[in-house]
Length: 280
Image 1 (cartoon, rainbow, N blue to C red):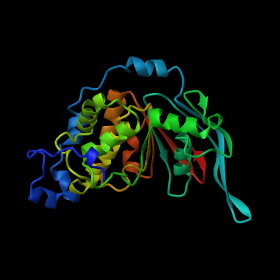
Image 2 (cartoon, rainbow, N blue to C red):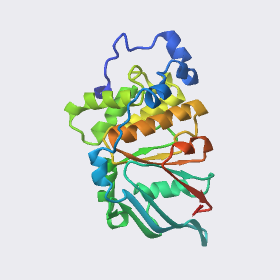
Image 3 (cartoon, one colour):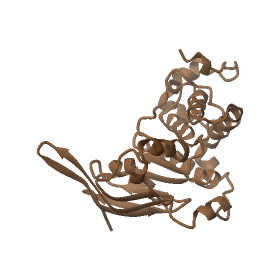
Image 4 (cartoon, rainbow, N blue to C red):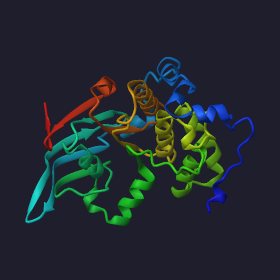
């Protein structure tokens, strides 16, 4: 039913039977050495690009006294209790906290998927609550990318086709698809595995396809909900290396949730959340 999306797999791109059988988490052994490639082999810019400098005149996200309550039975649950924060252009910001602390609820509101019960959330100076549903949808389609714990990849499509589909949905001109998909797949270290389907890739590789899919339309802000939660420490380090490279090469800002203390050191700023409030 989605034949128009299929790209013929060239013989040299197809996985050998033994490769496919060995995929899964063992596929990490075949993957490119992305940690070395991105952390040691990439020459990161010595200064912030002009685009980020211009955006840097003000925060890309501003949160002011945000509260969020949900009705339950005859009462309500107070999930967020007066959140204040700023995210500046070109930063990697982490929301740290245990499950149930409210960090995913906050992340959804930063992306306009939910609205605060009170308080303000400004994206590039524009209050999200002042936008109607159509305008918020347009803002998300153009300026915000999302990465979820579930990789959200279509299983019958190759990695290439999953990323290409996101460009189709974003209304990117067809003449840009091939160049942009190739660039994004190489950026996340999967240039040699872009024609494999999700079941032929390890968990870490699937997460990197999800990242390529999220950044393909060139959003200003990337929101990631526990992107390393289902990965071991090595795969988690690879994903964080990809994030740092994306910030420098794509001029994006990243805000993510995590409860993994081993990756906090790569963040520009960490907000620790306990019981719906920031501490520290």
